[in-house]
Image (cartoon, rainbow, N blue to C red; front, top):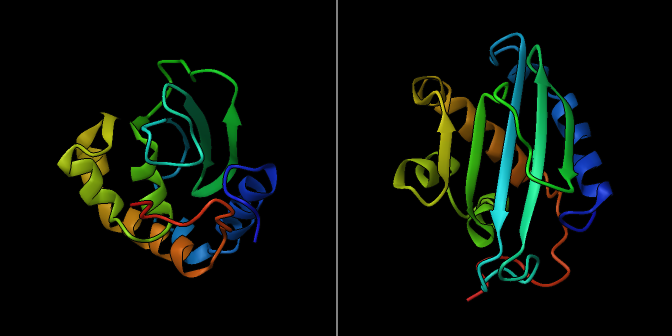
Length: 148
């Protein structure tokens, strides 16, 4: 299990996503570009207060083909979604402790993009995150959420 936010962690997520044909058949076809901004909040030991970690994902015809950290904010009108919020919230989702759809609907994670499309595929998002949480893809060297 690789440490969270390392190159090996991004690679492990790509590999896991590539093994699930049952999920990729349900994802809308075409290219989907997604940016995530995790803001250091003083709770997460992985991202310092005032720091923002920028992640980028590209999905092509139902397959996650790129997932990486970006050194700066991912810009572009071609993005379908941008997810922003406190780092500890994203990490609770990654640990399987927080439902990603609930986090979005409650405003814990701010979502920019077509909310109709987001809600249309909300159940699929839950399944994807459940697969992630059950497969122990992440090692938490500084402690696992909740960090309280």
